[in-house]
Length: 336
Length: 169
Image (cartoon, rainbow over all chains, first blue to last red; front, top):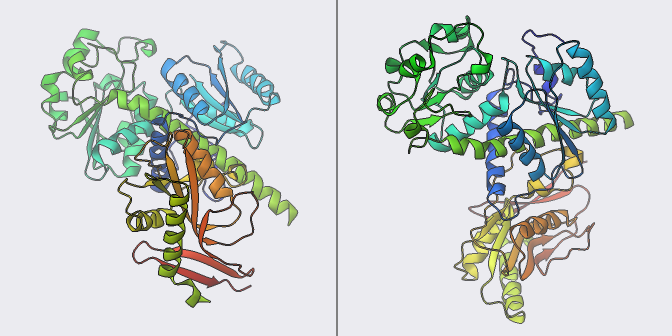
């Protein structure tokens, strides 16, 4: 398996531009991202009904393949698949230190033998979902639920859905992403999505030690001083301080981090009065964000969770749809 | 043939038919649901003609279509919206054209996911025959049979008009 940045644009689209895997936002254009958001809007309505289920994936088997644990992402993927009427199998597999590539292939062969139609993959290594998409049987869709430091595209899209719900647009928006950008796969996907959808400015606010070297090349401006960075913001996205990923002394102390980069009421008051506050969760209260802000009137953190189910329903049904349409077209070509 | 498809004449037929059925079945407070897109335009017009105050519902049946496993998801799906409780309600379901009957099957499946209605009356502006399922409209504005090269389409919403197209070979 390769750990370098994969370029799976060709891999995740069918010949006529439909989604067939969902691995990264790289290579997906504004129209397709907008289609995902529009489809998710329709699934939000489904989530408000007495019977929150549609028959799109009836009889299909979705395997949640989590090589790295996650409660929220896994449970919202599970709920999304169930609301699409799919059968769901949840597998939490901790990676062994040796021969990861090999054991991954074996695991997949076994799961494919169970006639699975879709794998939702979370892995600590960048590129793992891409590797699986390359080797999997045609017809099986792969959804990236977060890989290493590379991407977390469904999280970024649910954030975009949340922003669009509250701001009705992307044009002219100033959005900041604050905190541990270095370890964040979410930040990378968010910057990409905001640029494609036409946000006016994407700003990252962080200490230099928590920024990747090439961060500006991702399509953002950099601000080290949070108080300056909060000015005129329409959206502020706080990142979780990934304590479990910290190697070495990147931070003086949590308290120092909170003083400089934690979002409290005073700092939020420097933004636009209607600025919304987002956080992908789980929240470290008092580390990145003050409780009064996380639970305050400008917080849309719980909307993000609800939107996560709708986005995952959209991506799963679109990718499965792309796979079945492609199979049908191939069968028709074979006949002709 | 185009002359026979005067939209107002067809709407008159639908209105008269619906009034008769509502009276026969003793339905006093029906709720109207239109299937996107043409059916929604008709739901608007017929609600006004029948003097129904209850806001009509809009159904997008994309999530209920039976051809997902052949063609995938309709990329232009919009949210359905039913501004009333369907449970125990008498429903008038409206679409512009009925042919195979598959759209109506999908629509009924979707309606039942909102609640169990007391009854459903099906009204379509045009009935093209060629049914593949045992589903019949209670009232149709016109029954037509087209040849293989002809297509019929409702355009709207303002003004509503029926287009009969010759598709060539």
